[in-house]
Every structure is written in structure tokens, then in C-alpha cells.
Image (tube, rainbow, N blue to C red; front, side, top):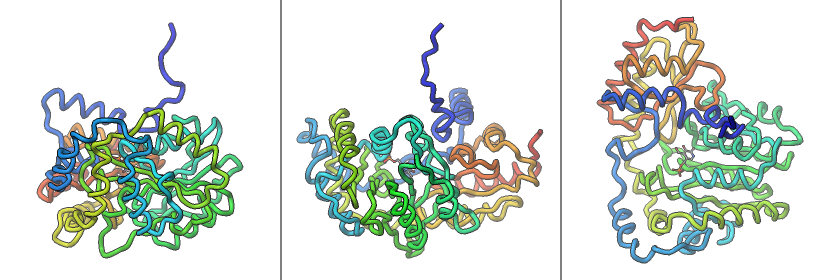
Length: 406
Ligand code: PLP
């Protein structure tokens, strides 16, 4: 009998989205059990409401956004994106260099499909947002993971990156601010990466979807602004900063040195045309949304929900014997560490399953983010403080006598 499946086993590279833990959660939910989901960065179910003005604009525009748009997107949207890129000092982005997408997700996949041949390598962070590894793999490439170092605030280890560059390396993915660690990278680290990209002629893929969710008065620097001599593709969108993940609005901008990328850019154009265009009513929100950049500021200031929830979860986690966490500076994730000796943990997926079954709390184990050691897990701290307190209490209780069986 023929087997119908791709030889690349995608469920091996995209656990965050599927895998045994998610399957078990689905089974429990179907059986009527209540589960606390700390596994997905989707603000809406946790009482975050999209800005009223955007909802109105979307509904008012429905009648005049019925048709396909230009495959790259509405011109007003692309102009607003260029204005945003200019503010972030991303160089030489023209109307031709901007592509809107059904979320950043679609464009990540498209940009990998347009580039990679079998055997090509892409440097991807570990831990990563797993869609990157999945997209590289789906396109036929090999994701080579470089280490982000917990002991230095989860910043990329530039030496490790350099040691993994080979003649087949085509590019480097930089997720800043980062999912799952919540780290915000300083300019010095970004400059180190740019130097490598210049030296080895690598494309920089900058996933900056959390750039407007930065706390503690820090400022996000776009890596493309430091790399005018490299080819850069910067990804951004409205799912997180404007709390409209379900509307599916994202974009990518090509900047820097495009001289040797004619063929690649032709491929991107073709792939973009093949999906005709991205959701047009959603595109119509880009220009107004990018005029409302301080809309979510209140969430990330002291007293705001995201800020206060971060303070709450970080303190509570660091209070659990055998658990420690680097304080995140952006987004709404943290990536706590477990004392594997204390708990005899050798399989982090097993640990996530055990917590799920015993405490009905769902989170993603570190391996879901291509973190090799079984000593981390990710918490999404979007639920309100009361729920986070309860989750931390239950986790502490669970860990008080947990020892993983060999
Ligand atoms: N990039 C990162 C780092 C993310 O965390 C996410 C979603 O969680 C995405 C991209 C996908 O975002 P979108 O909703 O625009 O597809």
C-alpha cells in the first residue's frame, strides 16, 4: 500500500503547534475537562480587546474591499509600512519591496520556499519560534540551530553562530524581541550578527512582530537599520501589538543590498502572486493601525496588564524551589528553567504531559522550541493575575514531590 505523507516529518519540527501534549489536551477537552491554556500567544481569549476604531474601520471597509488587491497589497497599506520602516531607520524600502500577508506566518513560509534548495542551510535560533524551523524544513532546507545564551539574558551567542556557518548557509534568522524567551537584543549583539552576515554574504531574516511590546523604557532597534549592505527581510504585523491575531495581518519589507537578489525577489513575487493577495479587509487596517502606535502602550507600562502580569509570574516562578526564570523585557512569554537533577527530568515533553494530566495546565515544553536540553518550558503570561497566581500555585504544588520516573 502506498503511504500518503511527506518524507519531511513536519510534526517533528513544529511541536508547539501539534504533538502529543496538544493531542492529549484536545482529548481532555473533548472529554469535558477544563484546561488552563498557557501555551499560545493569542490575546483575545484572555480578555484583551482590539482597539474599537480598528473593528469599526474593518467593518466600514468591508463593502469596498471585496475584490483581490495587488498581490503585494493595497498601496495605502504599503505606503504606511514604508513610513513605519523609515521611522525605524530601515533603509531603501520602496513600494515594490513590501508584501502584505495573512499574518507573518504566511510570509515566513513564502520567503523560505522562494530561497532554499535541498541541502541549503538556514541559521535559526534555539530556542526558536518553531514556525521558522518548520518553514525551512518544508522548503527542503536544513535548519541549523544557534544558541541563545540564558546566562547572558538569552542573547544570541555570536561565536556559536560563526562556528555554524558553512558554504551552504544562506541566511540567519533573528527573532527580536524573542519568542519564547521575551529577550530584547542590545545593539552590540545585533551589530555582531550584521558583521557575520556581511562577511559571509548571508541574508538576514528579522522577525520583529513584538517590536512594539517592549517594557522598562527600553527601545527596539531594527537589525535592518544596522545592515544597509546586507539583504534583509523584516517581518512585522498587527497580531500582537494591535491584539487582532484573528484578522491575519502581517507584512515583510525587503531592504539593504538587493543587487544580487534579483532571482530571489522574482521568486518571492511569483509566490506572492500565486496566493493572489492577502486578506484585503484586513490590509485596510494597516494604515490606520500604524497611526495608533501607542494604543497598546498602556498595557506595557507599570499598572498595565502585560507589565503587571510579567512582574507577577516572574516573581512567583522564581519562588518555586527548582525553578528559575530570566526576566523577559518584551512580548508576553517567559522561558523558565527546571532543575533537572532535583526533579530527575530527562524528558521535558513527559514533564509537560504530567503537569497537563495532573493539574490541567497546558504549556509547551522547551523541546517544542528546538531547545535540546530537557530543562525548560514556555509560559504565555496573557491570562490575568488571578489565573497566573493559581497556575503558579498549582505548579509549585506539582513540583513539591515530582520526580520523573526513569
Ligand atoms: N513570529 C513570531 C516570533 C511569533 O511569535 C508569531 C506568533 O506567535 C508569529 C511570527 C506569527 O504571527 P502572525 O499572527 O502574524 O502570523
